[in-house]
Image 1 (cartoon, rainbow, N blue to C red):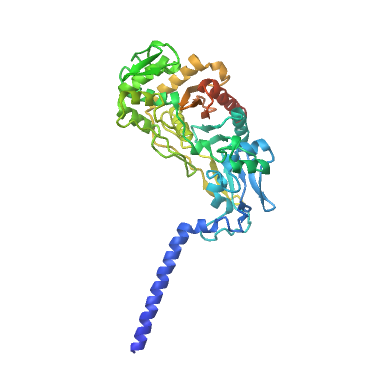
Image 2 (cartoon, rainbow, N blue to C red; image 1 turned 90 degrees about the vertical axis):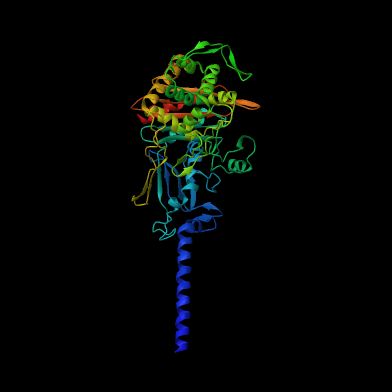
Length: 459
């Protein structure tokens, strides 16, 4: 009898250990299963670290951007399309971490927890995007051989029409791919998606944030005057301006992008108020697109003097903006203060067309009061009428702000942001040309070319 009891105890212990072990395995499987199945050594998906089993990636018009043919990953037949959409699609080795072939590898290969990567079709799932490849090509060509990024999205729906990062390369050109891996010369930083994974000094485009803070804080925001004598002295430091504007109010100061005006305005607003409005605009917060994290924008004047707050209010000091974050903020201005979350993945479907996942779009948290957003919209439209020239954007109702962002020991970055105020073509945009110089003179023409292409293909 004692022997039977001992055996029973041993069996119970073994059973409990088995159940515990199974539970631990299932937990690890749930958490790490996709990593196990999608590891680059899995020959069912990869060959020498290159994707061989995955579904199609298409643009908004059904144009194939990437697909698997004869156990080899192939891109669009047009070299321009391949290069313009590379950072959205991703490379076959996974160097571009934000590309769909890395960030959505599970969906593309058809992985699920029940069947792993097994599927009857052995082709994975298809991803439809909101991108228009022809607009992306236009943006890439407008940037030319300069480093930078262009982002365009529908501020009513959240659909990203264009996401281009340069430099780029042809993923089907072995010589270019080899040079890209070396990362030298014109290919330096080629695997970086500058729209998602970079931050830039915003320069004078940040004056939109300072303007919002002023409108909400001061009863005399529109009649409040400051004087520009080619600059202004604050805390014993001279802040220079590109013009000698005399005495200005807010409307003209924003149109002329007067540094003297906005530095004094920022100092009067103070550290706390300016920080509050910067954070409402998305600074110090992490933005995502289709679940992929963007680099966090940065704003901090904690403990700063008036001169520090003044520089920050002009978009200099330590201010850094991420293009996705700032595009979202610009979209909020256009959309009465409430941003639509940008998204690029429109759908994930099986080979037979069964939908598995839909967009990550939807409304974001309010960034501005409705009245404030509408007033800034009018000011941005005045910028175009008074400074940038409506003739530079024919057939469009563009509202914009330029920035010539100073970079230490280098030529300034050209930044140009805004939107088309049109119910039939509700598009917000961000243009950054690294070391490009004047935001209006360099970024403006890029924005116009891209918007004109959008007008041609989307209306």
